[in-house]
Picture 1 (cartoon, one colour):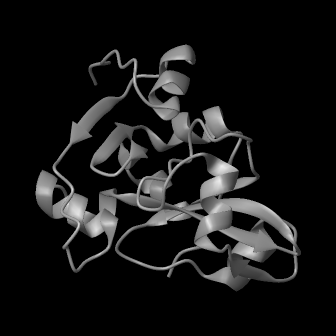
Picture 2 (tube, helix red, strand yellow):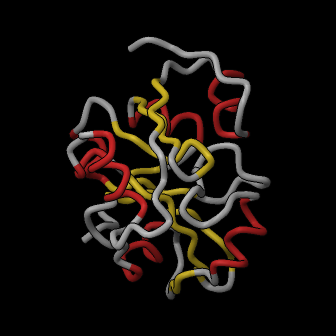
Picture 3 (cartoon, rainbow, N blue to C red):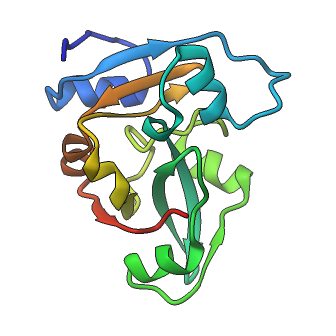
Length: 162
């Protein structure tokens, strides 16, 4: 995989600083799209939707945590709570997620957030050579090895998607 120098979003800067190999994929985000951001990206890029992973923030026992799950599915809140050592999880309010990460909804990256949150990546990612996650803005994705993503985020893998 060819590495591309960025100089852009905090996510891309974090990848460059860590010397992680990645590929940037960009597309023109359509604000009128009737599908989720991840599925819109898959269609625009001509990529298998199962390779696109979305970043979600949830409150687990009152503390924020980050989930990275396939865009083609949903987050299983009960499994996610268990994976981060909690009892109950609920999706974070979008404004809370934006303030906590420094990104806007639809462009929240697991990388380069204002503050590192406990992060869990769905176990299905381990079966793939590479996955795509948000690069820190709508219409910008980065492709990288899931093991590299986990290493950089100090994340764990668990079956948190459905």
